[in-house]
Length: 472
Image (cartoon, rainbow, N blue to C red; front, side, top):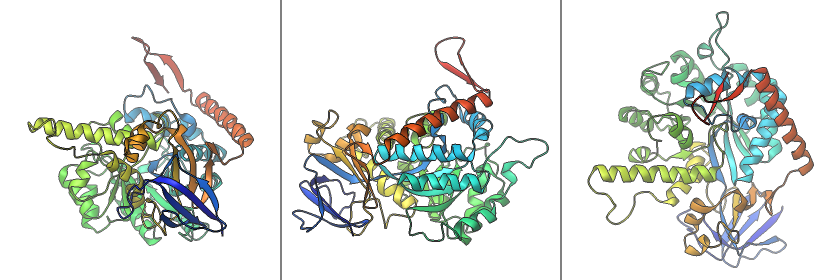
């Protein structure tokens, strides 16, 4: 069994029993954290001097469409989710081959590691067959990341001679194949979930079928649920599912920011988890992300990056933005009540956002017994931030390492990343063959250009200014 001793670090544990001690050692044995404390003895262990490092749990990206990585940057001029669905699902997604899915997922997962994320919920809703599915999973496993693979389904254009995707139940044979094959055990780095339509995007009988199928095979189900009135396939879908006992801790809701108070109370009372993707929601929707509203009902927020075509899918960015977004909402509430500025202290702090980005995500994925904090007995998923670089050398001296990481750190400061006791980034460099990585970058760029050409995806300047305009 390999043993690694991380010596003399500032540990941000996200564990109330441990806190944020400086001058602390972390002993890793095999894939687990064996001990956290000062002056640990570890004969024969490989020793890393972490005197100038802050060590946190690896970030948990609880909602990302990893396959979208090659199409980064094209969504800058999109003005609504209509543009996203029209350009992505109805056009460019239909151009992907199984090889494209594999390369996209591999580079997307490596990029997550680069930014200090050790676990992702890969919400993979481009899959039309078993070949694509296996390609996506192969890529996650090759990258070395921990992942909950949300096997989703493709949403092709609707034509008169085809059944609309929103009337098609999840393919049972595919879940059976996966769950009795490579995903028969949950004691592995990449595990299985079902990324389903849910009642916002599919008919009610489809949602019932899909949730029951997930439960039959012991899987989490996750659905996109904005909850916007008048835009749902089933207007009262979530309350109906709750009444039938089909909602629970095994169902994850992505977004949900347009839920009414009654609807939010219903799904949280049923035990559902909710993942906010604040960047996407602020770009395209009129309601704020579900953060403090969840807390009011006893829920635990989790956060994710969502869509690469819009912005950098860095959990460092997302964590910082979630904090800023909720602090803004706090200030507006205080102002409306005639109590601004806060008399003594703010309600939301950087430590809250860090919790959402680590333990919050772990809870949403039902992995909080294994990851999400630097706790003895848990898997050794760690991110190490160099406090000697330009971003952190002064901030780290503030005495608040959580503030330093959440408010100042960038990918350049993430020098070392460990997943299940194995280094996947070391000394600022991914533990992945650099020559192969360069070839993959060339391949993914060629695929990007091919898909845009095939899809007649054209860039042109907007008529009244420099803002780019995109059309299919």
